[in-house]
Length: 439
Image (cartoon, rainbow, N blue to C red; front, side, top):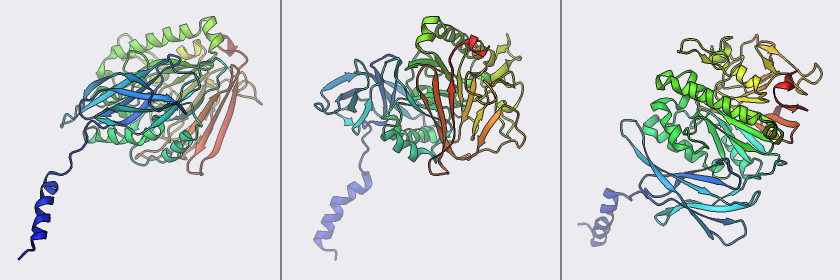
């Protein structure tokens, strides 16, 4: 015979064991920041799995907690996998922020609030010297550099992060649950500094829908291409994937090219180039590389560099466009390695001088940093690189960049395999910017 007290316990607990505890579908998660390109502003983006209000409560660090409120909106995103999972992407723009001031915030609604985070509003001064973390190809599995990046971000080492394509590996997998988990992983970086992105090849499934819906970059092209200013730099983010996924519409390739041309023309107006002398591009697939994998960048007739002749009309590449408009530094990923190039144009080296190759270089400087860590591991190099290959490493890691002033820019590569040691660094020094600087 079962004691009465045991019967009582079973009767009370049984419904809980059967029904479980329902999840809070209105609880915010995957919180990340982006800079909309307007001084004194920041966009907060997050996800819930049921409809809820979109609210950010915030105030200056040291002030009355959550004294200010901003409202936004949520967009329903339905993943194209078999389950057709629904998620609500919330976006709230904070405006009127004081430059260089630190704010404390949380996001959500009375149906559920996020953790408390903080950020420093970007300084809109032309004398600002912004600091960036740069990397691509960071996955949900084997994200080796993630912990170091998390710590350095929370030590206030960066003003923004540039993630140069390829997220999660892949965001659409398991009906977009891999994307959810990746966005949770990077929250400890992206909820504290603007997390600026460009698309890579691993985002292509369902016409890049997971990428286009989850991030909130400036402009009207769903984060595919855009530009923004910070300190003495004009930063251009682009999609190299328009050269490879023509099934999603060849018009995207031509639209981006025309946009790039107009954007660079505007950036090169004398008053604009004087204010923002550095033009820096970020795109996923490089024009050049010396990896031993037969990727586009290993070929002389690279699509990204020279364009495609099999489209109607033929699609122009990016090298001549960037050279004509005096692009100073070109940031790439895709190859799971680090490679620094000598100043290069037309497959030829154009160093500033033999002793000081990056002082007044005669062509753009290319940096490839795609070894942050993913399930595909690192790549191998061709044992016989071309003359333009200056430094190569297969270590896991990421890059740092500081645009110090109108003439000096610093770049370095961190090896996570070597406990955070800096394994390569350069100063790019330019007394002149623009097309005329090449001569």
